[in-house]
Image (cartoon, rainbow over all chains, first blue to last red; front, side):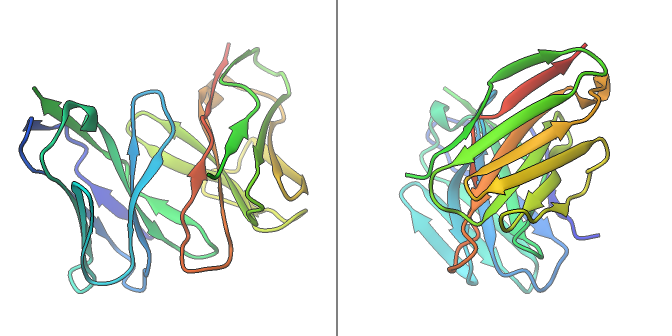
Length: 110
Length: 114
């Protein structure tokens, strides 16, 4: 059974600090990795996708991928209260499917 | 921008009723998906389709069926609704070709079965 694991949280971070979210996956051959943000009562929206080892930066967000260790992380710099949400990690499986983690709830304290 | 729409935001049905949830996407995506999301369980795949009239079972297909008669439309059917099908239902679509497998979600339908 292919799995994606995330700490459910909640993860509480002071405003302005760096939030670090982590995700591990079991399928060694996975090639595509995604971070989605989901506000309460809303549907998931894509924040970042990453396909190669290393870091990928987009504004305040940085995705990090380490295929050898089978983990992917998301860093949020200068955290804002509007970043408070649940963050879902997803990994490409077979047949165009994504395998989803259960999500980490992030709370940014003003 | 990709747009995925779902027929209802909130729906209340009675046990035993037949329920139709509709999803439409406007980006000519080949792949479409139906998920349900429950607290603490994350997103669970019910069915998906990678072409018109094609369907594949996901992780939890029992009690559900789907229909894809047109490329842009993917319907989820609850043949006889039960209280344990009370959930948030999310539709998503993605392109088949290209380097990305990004899935784009509709706003969701919160279904309550009484």
